[in-house]
Length: 458
Image 1: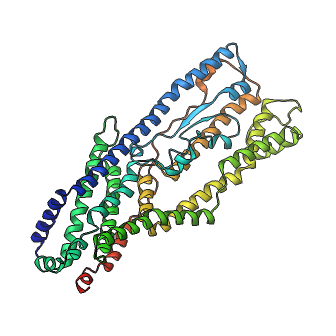
Image 2: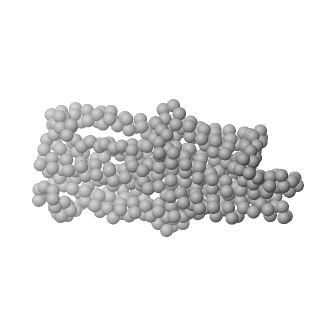
Image 3: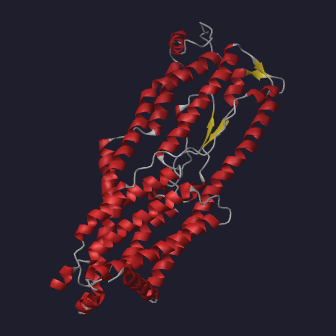
């Protein structure tokens, strides 16, 4: 069979599939799920944008209240205690399609001069059962449901003729079962890819969408295409071993459940056991316990410890045993230092988890794809760590601004608000996405398993 004949056969298979009610229902269900995910993602993205846009007015309202309270001036310590300055992580437009960790990690952090560690993990409470399920975004639809649609369309590529006894005739007319199998699986792949292309244009053209056809978007959808190519080879391998449509359907979905559900769960269990991670709540509790103990300990001794940790700062050498703002903020800084090892361990362990998840994702391409898509959309853990780093830098900037005023016992007026530090941020740069190597190598390896001739032999 020539290349032109093969293309004609593929086009004929596409037309035949589109005449089937099952094909139409499958594609319509995939499109409906995709459009729903785009709408939910758009609302999610707009809510984050609106939350960031409201920060300016909320901050101005806060400063207005403080100005009325200290209209005649107030101690710098009071101003610092009452002032919460906003920090945020600007969402990338592709966050509409891949929520990543943005729905469970704090996107906006109001930073005060107090201990920073409890503030970093101050996320809004949500329904833990819903959070465990994850977000219904387009990445979920294309990574998990699109392969399911492909399995439904192509699982009986050979078994429907094998069960009727017409498989030898089909093999003779087409010049070989391999060509028949390739044409039928390719036709199903083209139909599913067509639905994905429609969803891609819908995501770009959706009202209010900020997504553009740039390199990031092309990379995002290109990764999805490679993922579906992997599943096309999987369904071809399964179809070449089953003689009845019922058997091929059961085998296809057994493979789907194993790759999509069981393997990721097993990977998560193994990594969680290998790399236990301290919780943000533990950091918060230990930091606050350190601060509370400081109230009952000699103040000068603790302040001397603070002076050793900040030798370059200009501070008074002694503090009173009575309350003073200088001692108070110094103790918050010491409390942060007391859990610095735990905070570093928290980030290190999460990075180790991500590294080993990337390595073990060779066993489960859907996990690999999710990592790639979230990295491209800047919704992965590395982007969150970058946000935490920027918040830490801003908190340090606040200390450098307020602490000299506090130690000098300055009185601040409402006019001094304009000198307060201001946070600026843009969408974070893309982190290093996992390579697509498994999505290229695994299909080539699975080609060796495709043996349609065994159906004729049996």
